[in-house]
Image 1 (cartoon, helix red, strand yellow):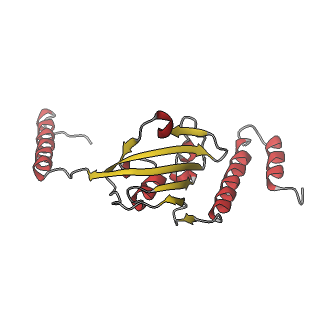
Image 2: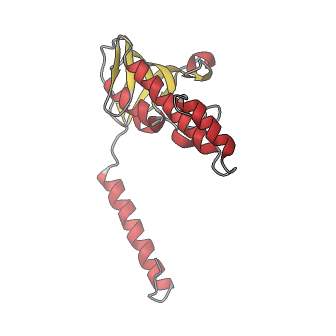
Image 3: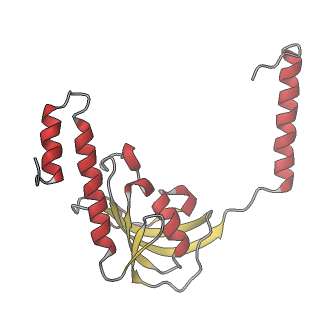
Length: 190
């Protein structure tokens, strides 16, 4: 066993392990492969690595405004796995998508707020800033995601709720709570 590569040792252990423990070495191999991929990518020319683990490469600078967290943005993008398998693309659909930075995965939230209108970036999103251990659809659990993201248009931030609307909502909640109090004979269970 001495001198055996880690993935070989883990495969050998997986063969001897009880059925309940067999997925564990596979998860370790996947996470070590993920770390190795991200470490290699971080050394590529032009790639910037952020403290969160997000990596990006600027393909084209933008010169417009940066979006706030709640700003609707028109974007073109394509998403692939590290093996090149495309799992989503607005280009393939023939129309850009519109969403705000607070409506997307964490890696996009961080990147979009750094980009300026007109920018085109290549993002390398580690699993914890993507879909993590749950995966989704064609995206497996703990997958590194590669996106090309173009920030075509930065719109206006969503307006904050008006004070009158907030006061009305709070009044309604207070009235509903009081009605529940009266209907239950003063007994309110939380």
